[in-house]
Image (cartoon, rainbow, N blue to C red; front, side, top):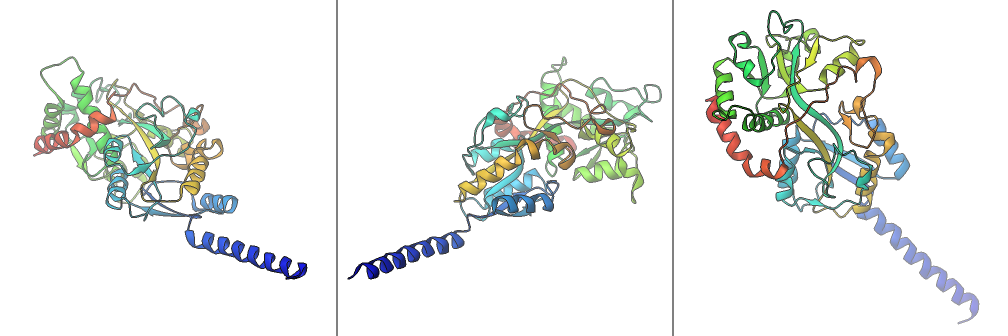
Length: 360
């Protein structure tokens, strides 16, 4: 074999090997991420398209209702590789997800997050991307200290003046309702009255014609008198208070030109510190793409926008909600209940059965 033929043969071999690598890369699907998320996840398609243009990684999002739907779907599809990432499992469900061993480690630098974002979990299996506190909001047009006294304890809602005036979400069907329900368990376990607990309160609230809905939207938009639902068709407005987020009045102000009648109730321990996570699912082999996406989601550029993208607080250190139009001024940062994800996971089934009994 002469020198020219040898060179040509080497080039053919190199090109063949290189072509094989290209073909393998095209068929591995590494650059396509399938994500399971909750319905309200607010990252826009335009932003996802920009992410794809910058990284070459395409993103497909399947919606699964609320946080409970995300964790249920992730567990049911464990090891199948159907989904690569989950978005929106919060700390009221995180213990369940960790026990089911559905997550793989991520390489995210956790030093970028605020201490508040790492309160419930500080490992590499679930990375926080936003947070907020779930609490009761009230309409100051009605709860003005004269017609109806502003509650200073959850027990005040059992007063006849509050009959049929509080709307909550079913903790079995709503992640917001589940968060508030867990807060009541801790609140009544630590209040001054050692003779009563959360079951007694819920039983009393049932007798006081508590409004219970399957989800946040009906409770807030249809029943709550102090929210934006008052301008929608089908509005009832029979509830002067509702379970929502402590920054919901700030969102109302943001869209209302720094005006709202809605106020977050400031009762220590009666709110739940909800933290939402993104996780890499067992069964996926797309570690590189998954880490790239998570790093993008928690980057300063993207995460700092969470107050108007996902209507939650950013998870990164120094992240806050915007001051525009009174958003931050009308947003309460409460003293939340303190309850671990392990305690929630160990007891939630029993607690929910107790709720069923109290509501029967």
